[in-house]
Image (cartoon, rainbow, N blue to C red):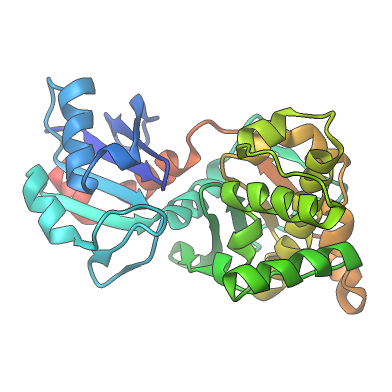
Length: 324
């Protein structure tokens, strides 16, 4: 290669970068930078290159961002970065080829290559049908959703803003939480509860319902505390609501090949997720229960799957291959 490829997975909290040294190669020199310490995507990329790869100059890049991407323009949803354009970032970094993807579009592109050690099954279901559509949902700083559809020309990713749909309540306690949430925020969208801030919000609203003080805490502190009853209830509700939401995604996308769970929160609570009502709520849609029972659900444990997905996108790009 004339130069390596640069790949990135940029969320509201962390901006992860890596180099791809050959088509099909694994991400190397992986590093994570705090998103909010930088003014924009080009600034974060320049800092990564200066600190972790000063000896190389990338010729092509695929940078995945947690927000909408359309017609060369992109915006990070859960950060204060201004809207930007791919052309400006490409020129700033001196690249011959640049693609900007939604982060869950990149994550979806990584799904077909996940090995047995990269994802663990959640619940019982037969393996997904060969060539079936796939879906991925992931609570982190926000709530990402994407699909992956097989076509004669290969896999086609379907990004979107599915985290902004209304969240499905399945119990009376969840209805109480939704009522308080609507009073506060004017809506009860999935991301308001199924995200890091959402877990904190659920804990606070449950504390109000129980009439106990809501001690300020982070999502990581809630995930780590298995003794406090309100925190434990918040975690159980989080997993149950995620199950209902993931079932809706499976139905909407026809994801017979499987639904994958990503994001930064779930690996920390894998034991709770496994023992929760997640899978029961995933299937609990009586008219199509048998349909959903046949769809496997898996938790992604690969350390940087979106970076691998961005590399896969470049490996399919004639322009990136030509630049290499």
